[in-house]
Length: 493
Image 1 (cartoon, rainbow, N blue to C red):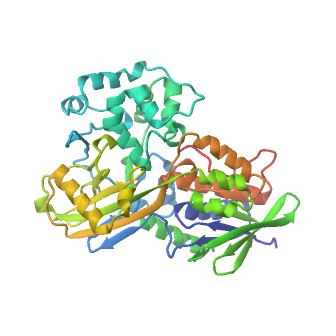
Image 2: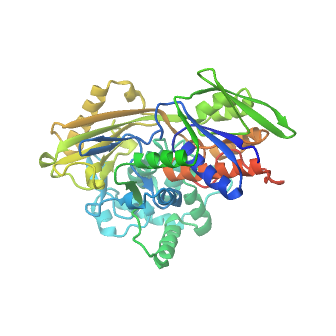
Image 3: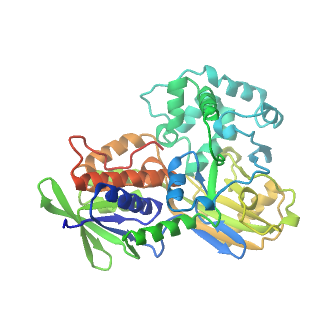
């Protein structure tokens, strides 16, 4: 009987969990006998996916949904038997707003796809001046940029849509996803689809219209999900289902297991054995190691093996954020409608966005309560996070009073801080990943995955975990052939 190969996955967030799930699935198909060990330094699984339930109130400390257009998230939910738990955003009051000039303006429906369904609301909102609207409409005539340059997201959006559209609408929409500064963000690393549409169609709007027409002509045998989806009882249900399935598959799950060092020794010609030294003094040996940890954690583990890789990982900066959830009496907030609002940097507010959680999602609060989730921090705005919880709550309440007129006393308050939680894909990011791949490639069986590389969303991490699992199986099966398989997250964000 063939001796099982040992694989250790370090990091029990969604990336590590998804890697372990895909690894067991793919190893079974390949007939590869494995001993899989998943290590997490914290006391619980899921990383930033944390759902809190207090009575009928359901809050998400981290992400509250995932993008349905990236199939990996939906596919994993189906495999785990969570299809009946998937929920769409509420059908009523779907609009969102943006703050400009001290007051909220409705964002036209369809703006996220750059194909507004109705121009009337856009024209009436006074969000953009006539010259701003005209400049945005000229996007069709703007020539494509150089395919060789790694342009900033800000430079790209200003070039294609004009300064007004960028500052008042696009910057808070796009940069908010990464809690980043659009002036520093790499277009190709954060929104590669925009680059592809420009190169293929010569226009983002033209490309989006073509994609929309193609999607409309496709036949669907089931209701189409909304752009963002969640789970009825919160996203932690995904973590619970994953850990349950991994235990059933024989994966060894260890929480409170911090890895302090990673060593290599000769195993056979062209291969290595990896020794992981844990904080409690114990050690594990494995033929393959997957680091599903933040870049700064992976940097410390890899530095003794390859200083170049450690240095490149150090160049991936992280932003810190905070979410503040509050429930207000609905009778005193009856004027609040829609899904929430975003705030451009130009408004110079502490608050960067707010979601009316109970209006956006079903099953999130009693009908007589309005549940709000507010966001602070991000690149260039992190100093505020040094303040005490009470101070943050006071700041958010003052902002809500000023912007929306909410002055009611909250019946529930929850503050969640995420230090160095959001990786930033700055200009040159993809080039640095190529160098990182080259630096790590001398160690077969050593692979990096996670949000630091090619996508920060839940589906991105799931997809990248599956690719990491595929590389492990290829390495251990000796199927790599002559092609050098990437050791760092691959795929399109």
